[in-house]
Length: 500
Ligand code: NAD
Picture 1 (cartoon, rainbow, N blue to C red):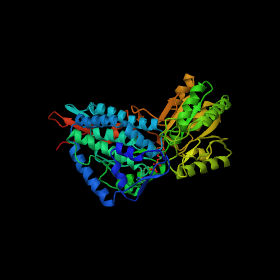
Picture 2: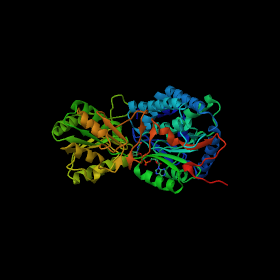
Picture 3: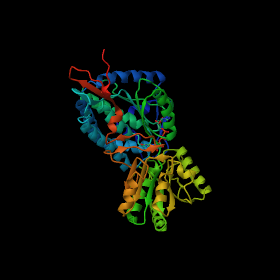
Picture 4: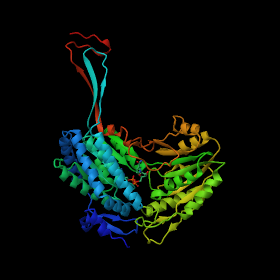
């Protein structure tokens, strides 16, 4: 392989880790070859990390929020300086094209900027009291150690969405990255440690990374000293975590699978549709939680849309994500390829007509590059209702907008959705209470990707969590309602008399 892996690891300050000889084998999907074998956190190390995180929290919550914001400002500064190196590592380890690797680091920078401003805006409320000489207020306090569990496909941005907010909110952080992308986590931790040195007064262990698989995550999720769990990954993982967390009444922010649709109306700008669909359905090789997986097209423009898409799908450049020419990189591993192929087989059994989906093999036996697939379906069958984490776009036909909205909403997941239309009534209906039931509903842009200013997350099996912008910060703090009596009488609420 022409890649200089050592150079990328050195540029990220983690060249030393590849000298480890631990049980966790790390592969690059670019060529399928092994690039590191890491040690994993033992149960005793996980226990120690929780103790350290509690101590870090006890100290960090005393630091005024705008000072905490200064640490996050420095994090943004270091990320700007390290953007190219980290972007390359993201690309190498997750397989997304370099432009998207860099975009992911930019997202980290953006959330840092957002969180710095937020550090002076963690507003509470003053509330009118029904009692004379009383004032009520609502205040927000740091919550405690926050566990952040992340998936392979956004190996660093999801940590940043959570950590930047958690840190300004006064929480300490324990990060359990995906076992498929631990190197990027170690690189970010190296950056974070530089930030702490520059900041000067950060408590030890304010952000800790624990390398390991599901067991490591399970031990942390079960630990009653961690009041807040933010977990991103499959619905299967979310279901397991939610059950354990509910038993101990931990708070969860769950960001799980999506099965995102786009509706193409007769008045849509079809040229724009094709460009939007190309990125939303094929970008990141279909491995985004917000990837467009279902396109619901009005019968009057169906043939035209399919013909244009088939053309684009045939031409899209597939190849090494580190090459400037590539638009589509590899799938993460063989399991992802096998899942894609079983889904295509199931779709054919259900009457689907597949084009694309074949493996592009010249990158080596263990690298899984595929041509994205278009599948014309006679109906929204079980396989269409299931999230397959690969570039498969199911095409469905509709006659009335009510049918299209019913199809959009007729899946267990509720993350993202779009409508393409020039008709204001259709657009407004789609974003109204009678329209899309997803956490994200867009007009004339694809469902994939998001800006950090809005709250990110979805309903139903997507888990209900919200991260990133808007008031998502409230998820990282505890709310206290305070009633203050500045008089000498003691009136009770609701006029209750109780004199002794
Ligand atoms: P995954 O569920 O296999 O793993 C995600 C993380 O959860 C990993 O760190 C894993 O070690 C950990 N984990 C798994 N089981 C656990 C358990 N029982 N307890 C604690 N931790 C556990 O997901 P993946 O294959 O890495 O990522 C792909 C999935 O993530 C897709 O379904 C995608 O839609 C979803 N995703 C969702 C969002 C979102 O914001 N909604 C964002 C990115 C990815």
